[in-house]
Image 1 (cartoon, rainbow, N blue to C red):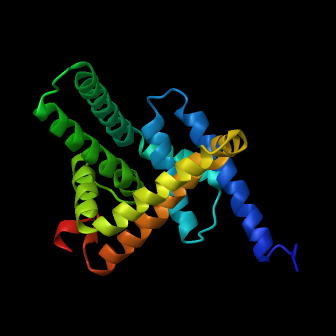
Image 2: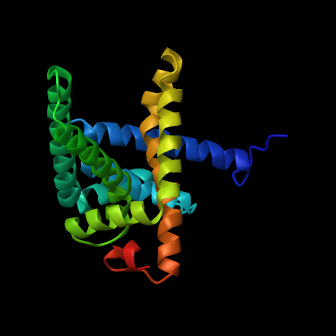
Length: 215
């Protein structure tokens, strides 16, 4: 039987659903200039990493504080990702329009896509949780991907399923706009938090974040 007491599981579920909805709106609003997508994503990870541990707090206040703290590094990271995506687009155009696309272009495209994907996956939660240089954050993101290939592939598969689910039909697409981005960010935060805990327990995390290669 459902319980509507403030300490009931149902009440906690509704609260979490509201938090996710509010956080998704904040992410969308702060991403609108496009150049700020990176800072908004890092801020959303800062809040969802706490959600994973059931830490209570003010969603909007925590988001805005993390947005300001991570703005510079996260914006540079996003601009680098945008440049990589543009390079991939050029590579794709060469492959499509050329009757005999050069092998080096195909290999370069695959490498750029793989590096961009795994860096995007772990760099934002790393920025949100640890103090480190941008170069150190990128290195740690790559180290984590190589250290935990099984978890990384499983995470990518789960994210792919979420994208497919929210693209299934128009009603699901509407739901996807309302909460989809934050569900994906929450999914990444949950996976990343488990990896961070493991590395911290092994002594591989310090002020600079998890040194996955040496743990």
